[in-house]
Length: 270
Image: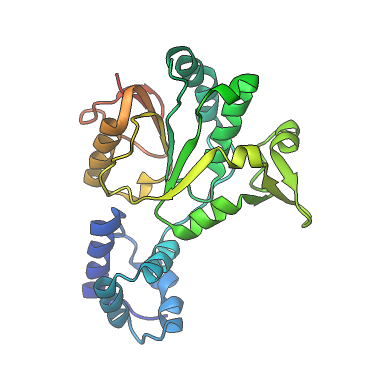
C-alpha cells in the first residue's frame, strides 16, 4: 500500500470537497486502501504524482474512477420502504387530485444504479393503472457517476436487489434473462425514467419545479455547510407543496431549513 502524506491528503480532500461536496476529511485510511492499487495500475509511483495529475488535468475518466473508489453505491428495490408507502398513500393521492395539467415532476437525485427511480416508476404505474397514459409521469434520475448511470440504463438486476418486491411485481415489471437469477426491468417501467449526469454542487436549473425530490443516503458524504447549501437549492427547486425525502440516517438542520418537517426523513415546502 502506498503512503499518503498529510499534505497530499489535505490537497485531495480539498479538491474533492470543492468540486463534489464530498467530505473525506476523516477518511485517510479509506483513501489509501481504496486508491493505492489503482494508482500503481495507472503507472504512478506515489500519491503525490497521482494527485498532481487528477487536480491539474481533471480528466473525466480518471475522476470517475476516483469517485467510484471513494464512494459506495449500495441500494436495492424498496430500500427504506416507509418512504415509498408514504409516497403511495399520501403524496400521490394529493398530487393526482391537484395537478390539473396531469404532469408530475419527480426527481431521484443520486439515483445510483437505478433501483430507486424504477421503484418510483412502478408505484406510479400501480397507482394510475389505466389512467397512466393520460399523465406525464417521467422520473428524472441523476447521478455524478457515469458508471452508476450506465448500470441503471442497462436495468439488469439480481435476486438480491429484488428481495423486497412481491412476486406479483416481479412478474409484472421484470423479465427473466437467460442468466439464472438475473432480471431485466420491463420496457414500460424503463422508458418512464430519464437518466442524466448531474453534480449536486452545481446550480439546479431544470425546466420544471419538482413535486417530489428523493435524495436519500447521498448527504452522508457532505459536511453540515455543504448539506445546508444543498437543502436550500432543493427548496428553491421544489414546487409549492413539494416534498423532499432524505435517507433515514441523515439529518437536516431544522433551524436553518425553510422546509417543514413532516415525519422522519420527510419534509415539505409550504
